[in-house]
Length: 452
Image (cartoon, rainbow, N blue to C red; front, side, top):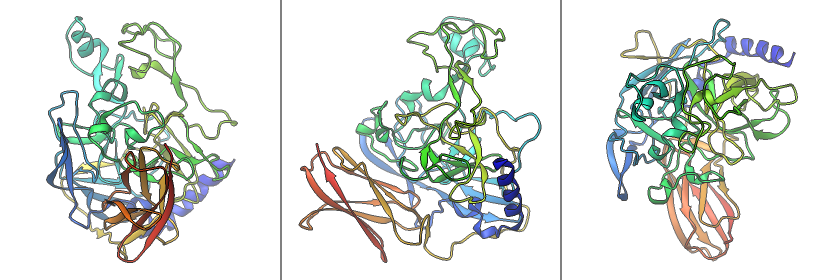
């Protein structure tokens, strides 16, 4: 009943919503400062500056569509990709057309596909779980089996597991220059259990920092027009129950051989489960179990649910970037393996209808109460301090660390189109410090303790 009530409310809201307040128009990270991309190359921990503009270039909208011009370059540093990937993040110079009125698909669900299946709010591509290689063909050929093509849908390799060594600190990598994430776009080093050392030499941030105390931000839109959130949300779909980690309803199967799918159907055999091919190496290693009424914080088979969010107080269907208890990425990661809604987003070469450019009335679009806000964590800290602004900003934010006498210790910036900066605390003495985040008109100061 609750879902029915919220769905009815959403339909009313969708018909009366003023276009300029639609999050699908207002939440994109627009580049207004000339920020360009930056990248590392292997063996050099000093980033190079790229010529291509970062984040979203322009946002234009009509009554039914929003058009996103983007080069696909994030504001955070990309690379290096240590699996031999020769590509760098390069300009895609694209226009994406996304529905402002997404609708549920009442027929056969549309599978997600290789390549773009959504856009993050910085204009960077979202891919699904796959890396385009399956066991029967290319993987088996590499192991001495018969050669063949790629992607025949028999034991599809999971990119998040198989290509981990090729991800940068922000958990992304390029495909022929098209930089993208398959998973929650938060830096490896901020996970509770760190499974990659890439950040040690090639430090970067990511689109957002996981915070278990607040609802995760809206971080993108799938190709069916429905929003994508980070890892945490309201426990109950109606917005009650406090903040909790939103969980995938997929789990690893209890198998030692790969001869059947989860539904029991027999398929071409894959490799036995082993240290080389552990459970989770292939998409078919997972099974879906529908959540019960006592599991309101578990997601459906598309990795989403109908729920209240801060941007949609009347409710909307939303995907979540799922992680496990250690904040490591959890299958199916963001969207998939099928879309909930009718897939509508397309890459277009031109805009053929009358559109209005979106331009906020102020330089700062807040995500909260209209004041500059920041979260500083972990607290206490020992080796790194993460500073996340509680806003989307069209200007750089200054970050300064002071000791309790007011002496400046370190300074950095939260760059336009990002929300995160880091301070290296490894050389700091134990004790209390002050972190100040400020722009030309506002500032906020937080106390943090260093304890090693």
